[in-house]
Length: 213
Image 1 (spheres, rainbow, N blue to C red):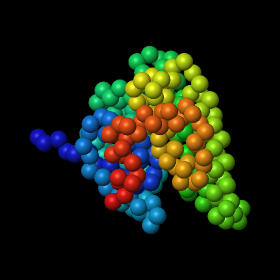
Image 2 (image 1 turned 135 degrees about the vertical axis):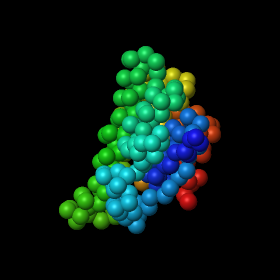
Image 3 (image 1 turned 180 degrees about the vertical axis):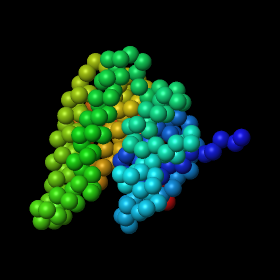
């Protein structure tokens, strides 16, 4: 029986989708992208809610499963495809996860467009208030992340000398930061990791501008 090509339900500018694209590329997994347009409300339509009741992207159809939540998807790829995106030692795995979670669970949720839109609605804020909100939380979060990289286990990448889970989270967050005018140029450790990641084909292919179908 021919193995079915995985399907990634994706939106090009979604940070969470960007993470999964990088992971799939690092794993060498070919996949079919299907656009779920967040701007026209497709993610709230019946068809997508059947895939993911949260109405979020990404969703990955693979191995007869429909997987949601970007970090859960990445860890599934680690566990089923042997992709070395986490260190072997428990302390290293804890640190790599802490770095990834600092972005995916602290910065990203408060800067999710639906969250910010609701805050603006109940406060009467406009475009300047929205931009200010984004800059505040992204700047604060990345400044803390920069300090977290001041660690003996930081190497060419966030943890060691191989791209892993933390880098998969960092690069999409940098993209989002610059969209909102956050200056990350002075964050030397983050910039060093960024430069290393941007040399890798898996990261290059996953860029939003290469996935704007």
